[in-house]
Length: 285
Image (cartoon, rainbow, N blue to C red; front, side, top):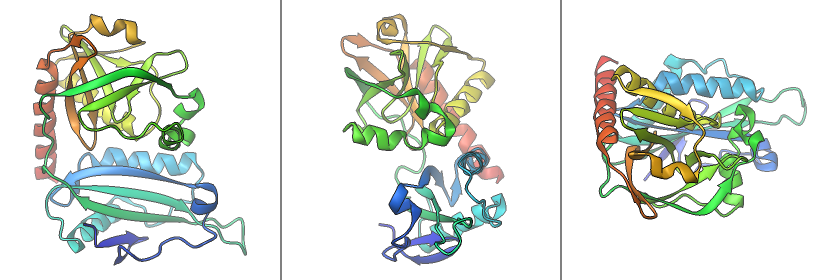
C-alpha cells in the first residue's frame, strides 16, 4: 500500500489533498497520466518515457517546470520509492496537472504528482496458459483520439463506453474507424507469420506506442523483420502467432481467438530478449 506520494518534489502522506477546488484537472479534466514500471528504484526504459512526457507537455501547451529534467526526475523517483520502502518491483503513476491562477489567467503552472505502488514479480513473466481475446465486442476509436494532444483521452472514452480494463487472461480488440485492429484494451498487439512480425498500421500516439517501438527495436536487433499492415478480423486465420505487449505486463502470448489457436515461439523468444535488455540496462545505470 502506498503511504507517501510526491507533489512537485515534496514528499507527503498519501492521504494529503493535492488538488485545489478550482483546479483545472477537476473542472475540465486538464491533466494526463503516464504509468511506468521498474525495479530497484529504476524505471524500465526511462529515457524513452521521459521524452514522451516532455513531448506531451509541449503538445498540450503545458508550462514545463524548470525542475523537469532527467537527472532531477530520476532522483525524485528514487526518493519516493525509498520513502515507501519499495526496493524491488514497482509501477508508478506520473500525473501532470495544469494549475489555474484565478488572479492571472495567463499563468498556468504545471504540477507533477508521483504515486508509486509495489508490484510482483520483479520482472516480466509470461502468464500461462496465455491470453484469450474476445472479438464479440467491436469498439472503434474515433480518429481524432489518435493525435498526441488527444490520445490521453482514450482511457476516458473507453470508460464512457463501459469498456473497462479486462482481466489478464481475457482481452478485446480495439479498432479504428475503418474496422482495422489497432491494439487491445490493455496492450499493443503483434501478429506473426513465419519469421516476420506485423504491427497495425494505424497506431494512436499514446504512451503505448513507446513500448510498441521498443518491442520492434528488440525484434529487429534480433534479426526478426517487422512490417506495418492493415489487419482486420477476417485476417486472423492467416497468422501463426499473436501476442500483446505493454509496459506493465511485458510480452504475453495469445493462445486463442474463438476457434483459432496460435503458437508462442516468437513471443517467448522476444520475452527472453526483453528481459535481458532490461536487466543489462539496470546494471549499466
